[in-house]
Each structure stands twice: as C-alpha cells, then as structure tokens.
Length: 207
Ligand SMILES: [Fe+2]
Image 1 (cartoon, rainbow, N blue to C red):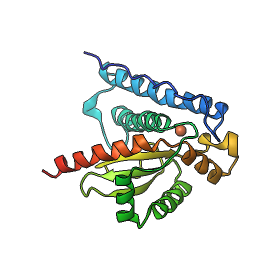
Image 2: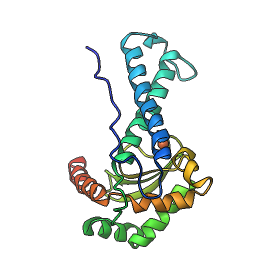
Image 3: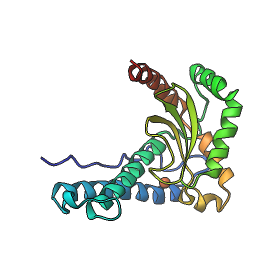
C-alpha cells in the first residue's frame, strides 16, 4: 500500500487586483515545491529509507524526515488555503455571524483587522486568523514558519502569506501595500463558511 500522491490545486486566477501574474506564477512554483517534497518524504518513509529504531531527538535520518514532513505539509496546505481564498477584486467582508464573533472577541471588525494586520506585519511567515476548537473563540496568531507558532488545536480561517516572495516583486519591502491588496481580494464567503463549520466542530470537540 502506498499513500496517494498529493497534487497542487490549480490557480483560479492568474493575477488579482494589486498582485501581479509574475508574483502568482513564481509563488505557485513554491507551492508546488512543498507538494513535491511532501510526496517525496512520504515515499522515502514508505520505502524504509531509514531505520525507525534509530530515531532520536538530537539527530537521526528518520527524525529529520519527520521534521521536514511537518514543514512541507504546512507549506502545502497553507498555500492551498491561501490561493483558494482569492476572489479577484471582490473582497467584501465577513458574514454577520462572523462579524459578531469578531466584535465579541476583539471589540469590532476594525479592531480585529487592526490586530490581524499588526500580526501580519510582525510575522516571518504567515498572519493567521484561527478558530480555537477548545474555546470556540477567534485568535490572530503569527507563524514564523510553515509549521511553527500556533497551538495544535486550532483551525485556520484566514491565512495571509507574508513571506517576501508573496509581495517583493510588486511592492519591494512595502508589505503594508500588499496586505491592502490581500484584503481587496479576500473571499469572505469561504472564510465565513469555514467559521460556521468550525462552530460545529467546537461542539463535537467539547462533547
Ligand atoms: Fe508562500
């Protein structure tokens, strides 16, 4: 039995308002890289490339493969969500329900956004709005790598890539301009639906 290979989700848009085709094309190559590496690592593990009994926290081939697997799974899934949430020039806003939760947890939508943008400015990888399965609350967190900086029991609602590759071609070091463009094209319908599903998961989680 071998695990089915992953494949990158094709881009819905070649470019969107404020983010060029060149940026998307180059960025997509990185996404594909994470997909390929994930497949490669799983294949190696399946083919007994290293002895699992020699796995160790200091250094081991098996351990290193596991470490990089987590990184590449993060890269693959983060980018799938990120690219899938673009809706060219049609960034609207959260559903009434989600907006109410933002007001409850942050004070208002604007306060939520201020905190999210600040998180994105601080991050070395991703700014993330996530849903806490334990508390059913919204959290803005900072990821300094594809797989680092967040508690395990959360679900991403919005993932904003702030690695320089996401904006350098279009904005140079001007990350703020890119963040504005990101919001202009964010498909809030998808985000809001994800939020509704998370609420169901929260109820199951706490049964
Ligand atoms: Fe990226």
